[in-house]
Figure (cartoon, rainbow, N blue to C red):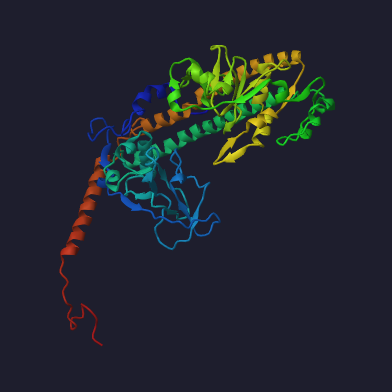
Length: 517
C-alpha cells in the first residue's frame, strides 16, 4: 500500500469505533454534544430530501437500444455505479436519475439492501423499482450525503431497520426518511468530499496493485507446478510417449500429450495405482461431528496448500459403517486425494498418519500410489494446472458444477520420472511452494488493509477529523433553520391554495376571465 497517504497506526486506533452496527462511528445519536463545532444532525425527512422510486421493466436488451436501466447489481459494495452489466429499455417516461443525484438500493438481500451511490453520468439514466432516487436541498452536498448513506450501509444500519420478505428485504420509505445524518457546514462538506476522493483514490490504487499481486502469485504457482511436473526446460524425448499411445481411451487422446524428458514416461493412472476409488456419503444419522472412531473427510478438509486440514468441522463415522456401507471408500495414510466435484477442481492432498484409517465422501477420489510413483509426486501431478485441465475437459457440467467420473480418473495420464528424479523434484517443489505460501499469507494480511483504510477514512470524515474546521464557516444549524423555514413556507402556501375558494369571474371585468369580443 505504498503511496497511500493514510497513517496505518491511526487506523488501528479507530477500528473499534467503526466496527459496530447501527450508526456507530458516523451517527451515534440525536444529541449535539459529541459533534464538532458547527455541525448538526437531522433526519432525511427533516431535510426535505426528495424521494422518487424507479420502475420495473421486463423488456431489457443488451444491444444499447433505448436508455440504460440501472438495477441493484449496478451499485457495487464500494458505493459506485458499475455498468459493466448494462441493460437497456425502450421508455419515454421522465423518471430518470441525472448527474448529482443519489441512488439508494431499497430492495435486495438483507446483506445488500441499502447500498448507495452518487450518480456521475452526463446522460440521464432510468432506474428500477428496487432503487430510490434521492435529491437533497441546496446546502447539502449530494456526494457527501451519498457517501454517508453508503457508510451507514457498511456499518449495518439499514440491516437493522429493514423489512424482511420472502427471499428479499426492503427499507421502507418511512425508515429511510427517519435516517439521521451528520451535517457539517456546506464548505466543510465540500472539503470532506474532496479529501475523501483524494485519499480513496490512493486506496483504490493500492487495491489494484494487490489484485495484480494475487494474479501473479497464482500464475507463479501454476507455472512452477507445470514446469516441474512436465519436465519443461529439459529436452523432450519422443519415446516418453511410446507406452501410453498404444492404449485407447474414451476420455483422453493420449497422442496429444507433450513429450517428457529422457527417462520419463507417460503412464495410465490405473497401471501405477493399485487402488483408485471414490467415496460415498451415508445418512446424516450415521455421521458424528467433533469426535468418533473413523475420520470422514469432505472436500473442505483439503486446503489450498495441498494438505488435509481435519480441524475444519471434523466429521466421523463408526467402525461398523466404515467396514460396512463405506467399505469401498476406506483409505490409508499415504493415499492421495483429489476432488472430482467443483469448481474449483484441483484440491489434492496426501492422507496424513494422524489416524490409522480414514473414509471419504462422494466428491473425493483416492489414488493409492504403487511402487513406481511417490505419493508426494502424485499429489503434485494432481495439483498441476495441465493435468487439472485434462480432467475439466472431460467433466459433465450441471448448473455450473463440474463432475468428474471415477472411470476418467482411472484413465488419467500421469507423468512418471525415474524415482531419484521424483525425490529431487518433490523436495524442490515442497520448498518453493512453502515460500509461495508464506508470500500468499503476507499478501492476505495486506489485502485486509483496504477495508481498514476505507473504514478509518469514513469514520474521520463523519466525525470531523478528516479536514480542519474553519471558524468562518456558517454553522450547519443556520442551514438547517433555513431549510425548515423554506419547507414551512412551502407547506403554508400549499395549504392556502387548498383553502382558497374558487370564485366566478365577471365577463365585464377586463381584469378577470376572457375579454368580450
